[in-house]
Amino acid sequence: MLKLSPLLNGKPPKSKAESIGVENLIRAMLKKHRTPFMMIRRNILQRQYRRFRHCLPEVTPYYAIKANPHPGVIKEFVRLGAGFDVASGAELKTVLALGASANKVIFANTIKMPDDIILARRRGVRLMTFDNEPELYKLSEHYPRAHVLVRIKVENQGSIVQLSLKFGADPDQAFYLLRKAQALGLTPLGVSFHVGSQSTNVENYLQALEITAHIFKEAERSGMPLKVVDIGGGFPIQYFDNEIGVNFERMVRQIRKQIKLLFEKNVKFIAEPGRFLVGPAGVLVTQVIGRTFRNNKNYYYLNDGMYGDFSGMVFDHCKYEFKTLRRGQKFLSALAGPTCDSFDTLSLNEEIPELYVNDVIYVKNIGAYSSASAVANFNGFCPAKIVMV
Ligand SMILES: *Cc1c(COP(=O)(O)O)cnc(C)c1O
Image 1 (cartoon, rainbow, N blue to C red):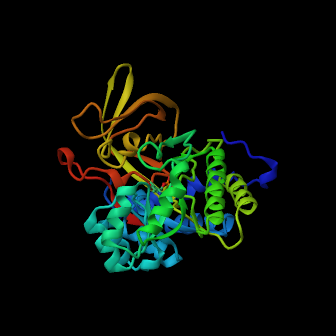
Image 2: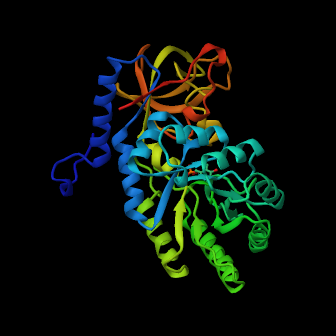
Image 3: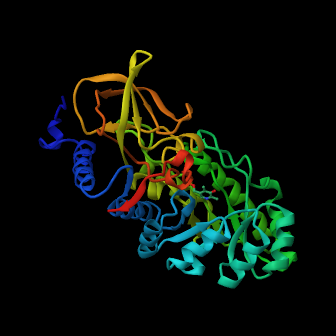
């Protein structure tokens, strides 16, 4: 039973109250939609955006749409005034078609296809990242007026998803590369980095900012002052109700302090949050489509799985909290998706009440890196329909 703390004036704690709200919402949506469906809650998108702006007022967020490119999500962030981080010509077209302005888009893939560079030029998306010399030659050929940020390789310690294994120049080379950009007629604007995704270790940011400040000093001394720092994404979210160790507010307070300590006031800061802005807004609602008893436990088969909206368990190394609308004594159980592949097993040790066919299993905080990487039609099963609420 839930124990009420006297500090809460008899009200249930916030997470409990929120769960009740979510469950009422699920019950209402079940009357209108077939499962599986994913609700994206607009008020949570707004809350996360405001939280980011409030805690890091000097840093302009460019939403990284790879986390969830659903048009409803992009439109909401256009409405809120966010910028956008895109990695391909197709993503670039998507955000512009949905109302983003070209001067608030960063083409943040350090390896770009020539056609996509030409598209960026035609559409006026000027700001981009790079981390190698051949890319500079490509840019100078197809988009000589591009504004470039050199992406440096930084520590990703403690981040769940590593993002410096494949991209990022050696910081020692950063200044040389920016000089080279200038020599080729491009405009060198600054430095970008990415500390890895779901990065709970603030040291990664603090250290990356220190390295960046050194590059800024070197450039200043050499008469090529830089103006923009892109601190990337990576901001973590809480996946489990009782999880500890994720504290965005505390983390960004330290980041903000470091920015003030190391950089002049006229330096412009941007960030590329993906997960942080959209993850908490997503609630996936599935139903049990079959059950059996094997290996001494209940096996429940759901109508969404590893190939669908749980694809983040593979690509994003993500773990989720599976919740049920049914209450009661909990038993060790296994959960699996609908396809014929044994790999489509979601968990072998969930403590959940006994469930029946058609019962609901839902997962909160699943808005990022879920539907985005789901396969369209493997074995004839489709990912969840996305419903903006
Ligand atoms: C994936 C990615 C992001 C978003 O990262 P989150 O951890 O979701 O905030 C931002 N920038 C780049 C370059 C990325 O590859």
